[in-house]
Image (tube, rainbow, N blue to C red; front, side, top):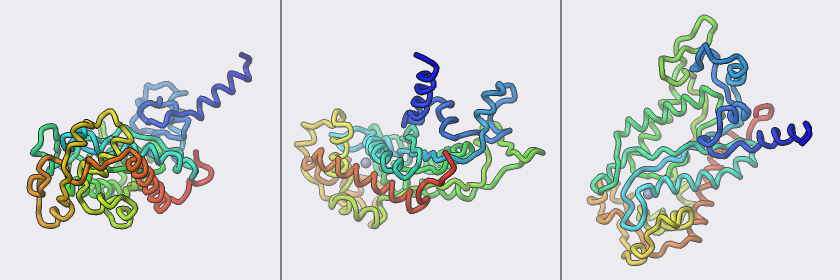
Length: 319
Ligand SMILES: [Zn+2]
């Protein structure tokens, strides 16, 4: 291989940053335009070349997509991580559309631990305080902002009202964050272990699919509110991770028309209150892989449209 070929390989490797944030190296992300604020979290003894690479001016086309779900009972036929599977599939399916707008989208490792009080009466569910999730989301956003990510996109598939409120609180906590105390040279001085202080200027995009304008693009069962581990969610898991579906159990399940959204309006606080006695409602036996593929496409289109609504296309002159 001559020198020119070697240069070509390097260039193509650079273009092929893995779509998974967690699979990338820090140098991949530096090449994508991310850098940490001088005086921020990098140590004084790090080598100079690495320091220069990691402290490039802020500003990038990087969109960080955060799949959000729960560890929560989903009937006798779907796995506890069903919402994580759905969120991840939707986020991954949104990548091509976001790239075509000029962005450089990357999938963050999912957030799986959150408030899940409705399902807390079933083995396997792990429910944490809403404030724990809110603080984590706001800190993740601050850390991304500190390195020049263009926006954080929350792709959420867990619809427990306590969790939806916690997302809203996290987005607001980030947006109202103020810059911390500065060094003499004007650079931020974060507390030990804290993400770099910013001004909350990085947009956090969260299309809440329970809002009518987004829900109207999803299936009849989803809109009915009988949408926990029913036809809607089961179809998506059959499309995205069929090996996780207990199909014999699924085919034997009777439909349960209990509407969670109606029960919540009537004051229900648990699945048991809402008539979701085996941790599912809707009609899982009617689920199909094809419907799941269509739903993933619809969810991805919602993500892309929410980004366009908030950001437009990527700005020229950034990476
Ligand atoms: Zn679910």
